[in-house]
Length: 173
Image (cartoon, rainbow, N blue to C red; front, side, top):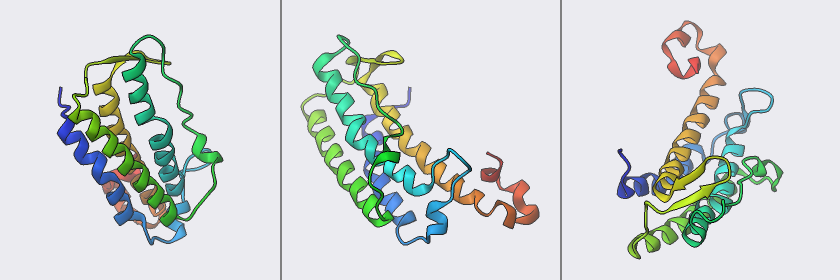
């Protein structure tokens, strides 16, 4: 097992800044491209991350602390971001940053109070899960969507790179 809370916090704290540095000010061509019908563009991915901050990670963590394994925590609608008000990328990033800052502050307070990482809760699909697993998933969820955004953006130039395509692994995914 590789999970450490300290290292997890490093990623959770840096993701908003990473996205802000990478995405703020980019042309809509970069922000609105996707991989085809039924896929998300970069702005939608940021909106999804914000919805997860509001309705997934900390609410589930708090539910596990309160209920344990007694009942499964509520499902998270992974597509809810498609039904909320659309904003500029600057506004989307600011909202994500604010929500993440609040959640990290709450998480740090819980850690200082002795957060029981091995405490178990009930996932509606997976069954029993541990707080440690939820926190590790939160980190990997960030990394997954950072990877997704860069892949979507890279594929925008797939036809333009000519013969170099075979050397660009991101275009093979």
